[in-house]
Image 1 (cartoon, rainbow, N blue to C red):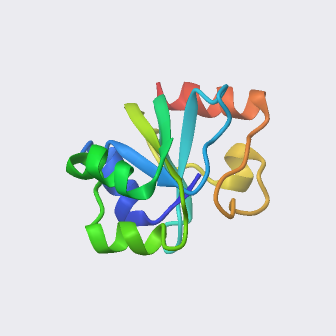
Image 2: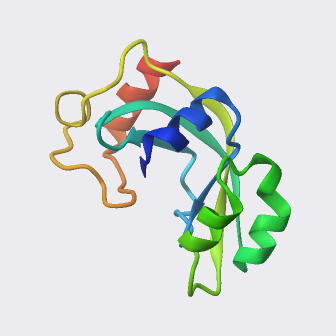
Image 3: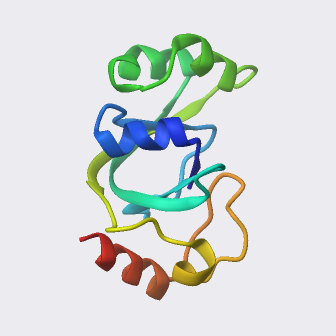
Length: 131
């Protein structure tokens, strides 16, 4: 999942406990790899998914603003014109010894626009490096 470095760092530090998206990820998703966008341009960690909630943006803000890691203005700018959004709940944060390259470590040629699914073997190997 592509995440701006500021928010990626907040997830990794434990201050941001929910990642907001305009649509949910698949119900079978148990882990999210955190690809910090430019200038980092690497996978800096992952988190286990504790669940996800989809509702009106105002409801998401009310429920999660204390662990959102984003200002109210940026939150509502992100969801501008949307009738619903999703909060992906962050559980355990995992960190590799060094950031992972998309191509060399995961076999992914381009960064995800928002998110993309990894082949099971690549995901498993990357998560083992973070355990």
